[in-house]
Length: 195
Length: 195
Image: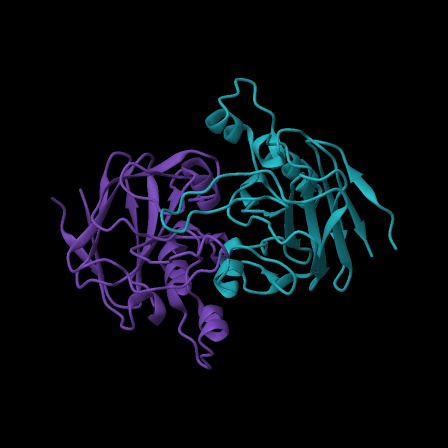
């Protein structure tokens, strides 16, 4: 088994994942979201796509057995196990603008967006290329009749995991999410392991 | 009033829209979807973002009074009137891969994706830059409990419109959608007018 890596609260990490390797995302304390992005290491213009993935799944809430597709309709990651069963694939990483617009912050944190931009910069991924992330453990219940949704505390408990298998050589960006609402009101670390 | 332009069934169009102009999207026969994309004319790396827009609206179904944001959290388009009230902002434009994966087509049409790629190429927009489109008149009801959704015939009747006002100088890509399921089983034209 690989070493467990820790992402400090309100920060991010970038790393490579080879085809066939698994990535275990761990919520060590519970109720903490991790935004996850994936890009094709051979051509970073190919990246994870919520629109393709949701279209092929015909379901908003993805879990074990579901596959995350790229903008070119290739499978990037398979979800091979999942303790929680509730994640979000609708919303973009929180950013300075998110905190200004939704929270009214006057000196906003750079958020997951800024953390992902820094983490992915070494591979040439530019901020404008950051799409909707797969938001591990993020809990966004939807009222089907009206389409309204709310951001509620994650359902994850301490030690819960979601495990992905890479279907191509990837660059991964991951965060310990920086938005109060998404994390039940406190900022906690996220851990991951590559096997 | 501007001239009414017609987009033939299963095709697309690209054009510019100046800040302050309105774009009226018309469903001339009813039950026909039009995928709509917008890029900042001054910098095409800034494009329409479902993730930003849905986050700020806290609602999946957008209508009059809602604003469509870019990946940089700037307002690109305001919805100033809407006869239908049901559109989709979850799913990517249908493509060769959509028809192969979902419909099992052996010689698939290039779909809205291919039509948009051709329509936007003169401005330097590359296929990999095509995000989730705002799918005018597309009817995707969601089961809030399970997150499952289906693609149902549009609720639009002949002559129904949705009207957008540009908040920046834009490049617009639009289609008469090519997917049978999205259009109640037949391919019809879409019209638009710029004022």
